[in-house]
Length: 424
Ligand SMILES: NC(=O)c1ccc[n+]([C@@H]2O[C@H](COP(=O)([O-])OP(=O)(O)OC[C@H]3O[C@@H](n4cnc5c(N)ncnc54)[C@H](O)[C@@H]3O)[C@@H](O)[C@H]2O)c1
Image (cartoon, rainbow, N blue to C red; front, side, top):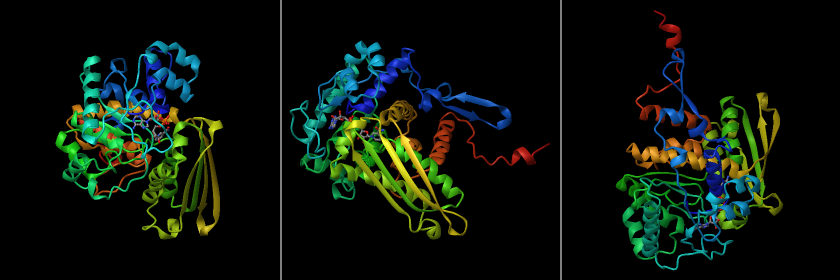
């Protein structure tokens, strides 16, 4: 993982605690999910990890890069997500996970001053240094397979429409020319894909979400996924909005504000990094509600998202939503949601699931964008001529049917008419 911060240390410490039998993988679909197979009358319900061949938690080895030298134990204590009482029980294992020096460029994360950074200059040399890190990590730990998940800070906003991103040829040339608009997350992703590693982007910055990277992933036969872990407020939005839409309740306004005090909050206090996050958070309602198809219900929707850095809260974010809805005859109503959440506690199981599912996808010969993993992302990546699916429940059906498909089981359409009409 590029980034050994709150999310990644919560994921690592949690997984170590779980495999030591001192905690439970709540929130992880790979560990706690189950799936129906066949018809309802067959009563075949299987645990996902018993159904598809996923890597076992005991076989996982963790590694990462960061711009700070803290080991995983120290970084987890600083992040302040998991109690030190729990961290101390697994201190030896966590302390042995030390970050590798990062590829960093302050232009893309203005609020941080990295000290633990590779000295090599130039895009090509930095990519080569990252590739060497991957090879060393694999060799030193005796690994067969590796997955990379970006858990680094949100980089400043970049418009993917620039010509550098259009084709693999133009990207290769931009790398040769040390084009300044190429962000570190792109270099990590490029290194991963070239080493044959599946790659997921947990942040909203571009990283792999542009045509040149789609081509590279297909060419190298590697699965990619992104972007921006779906936790907290956006998770709530993609649970609630499909419900309102299904019942054709109108929405005039959805005002979302957040206070958080972790390092992520500090980075997002910079307007350019916030812009990246804002674009990621705003797209969700547009797609779910389709105002162009339902102008009377959603045509006037005013959607606003604010994030405020407020240090006293640490990782314990408060996401507050005011939703102005309207019903029969246009009568207005209001809904207030106040989610006192723990950001990294919600994100950690997503890192685990993505690592295991991307590894499965890779072994199954799936490459390029893995749309079936949209379930985990705020801004799901999809083919440029498609539109993304944001509705959590549609995403869940897609994920489950993909697993059935991979295992040669009948897909479930939820039609169910045959239960009533084929009685012979
Ligand atoms: N629930 C969540 O917490 C959540 C949800 C969605 C997305 N995200 C995204 O996930 C990412 C991680 O979140 P976090 O809360 O762990 O943040 P964090 O600030 O605690 O951790 C990010 C780490 O990345 C490091 N970093 C920055 N640039 C780097 C680089 N070029 N190479 C290596 N390391 C680098 C930072 O030093 C930091 O330690 C952020 O981009 C955040 O927006 C988090």
